[in-house]
Length: 68
Image (tube, rainbow, N blue to C red; front, side):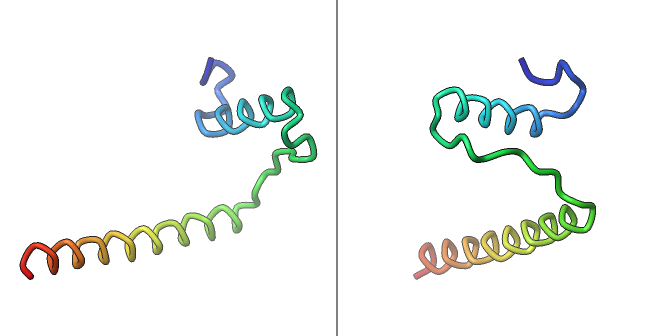
């Protein structure tokens, strides 16, 4: 299953999903690509910022709904 190769959970999960897509011929043209360090950091910053914005808006909307 996952983590036997020591490469990491997410990489194993993504490769398993891609293997299933290739086996079922759903999307045989998709192949995994490695991100550079800079691309990985950019993705991390984007997720961090979007998550912070979404969490803040969810908090304020819940507060407005509960108080109003």
